[in-house]
Image 1 (cartoon, one colour):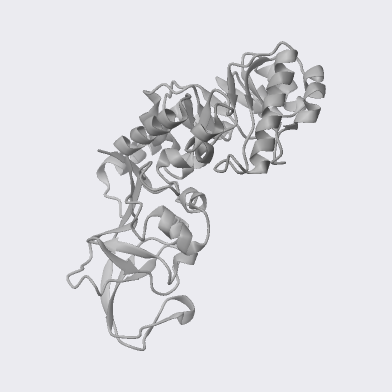
Image 2 (image 1 turned 60 degrees about the vertical axis):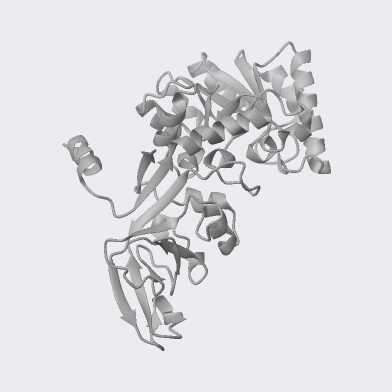
Length: 371
């Protein structure tokens, strides 16, 4: 019964809020990054594909047969399995060893501690292993100087990758970046000395991949594309945004000069104005910091947020659209990178990074592949 209800809801109910995903933009971005980097690209689908929808993005990219998809958790791996994804899956985040006992899983794992590796060897002996080394960022990973100790204690395992992560990937000339590349090269040499030659070596994410020719073939033989894959990059015109988030105008009314709007009455109308109510708020991923700073667009006209954004509602100034009426489509996040309400522009208004806005888009909002 629950499955039937979900099917009816997806196919027959009209959504007030929706996230449209451009298939051509996604595939074009994938091809562009691969061409710039001149190495195979593994799409990063962690954190619900950076808010875009892990199952929808996985289904769109699956036919391109990338080397593997990168996800954070077993849960995300299962989400792709439900979609009958055929591309191999690399779990990059920490996995509770107890969860590996449940059943045989078709995943590979990033590993940086002996306890997890022993659990994989015991319960998932078929699994591929990507050894994660810490080259200086000091998050997860085996310090390169401890790598030989790790290899000495390591149970028999199918090593298919060596990986790390750059802190300053977009700046190949930064001394920290050069030091990380040197340490990664040292890690490869250590593995080779132990007779281990992994099929994949990867340290580069989006920022490094977009400037990869400057690295002169020091990034390994594979790249992990995340943010750039979804079309968000500081350098304009290289990739195209995939996501367009729209909502529906549900009420229009007039406010007189001097009247106040929203929680704490933080906004005071400086003139007579027309406002519109939107059924989206910070629960849906419309960052509270956009209050009084950001805007949405109605018929390509920017309509500033006025008053504080609420949990499920927000208010915009629609005075510039005299014939605005309930039922009109309003674009909250535009897929045109130069628009004031693009993800990149909105993140600047919030003084944060695009990742934060994207991953906060609520999973319940309907994702629709288009074009």
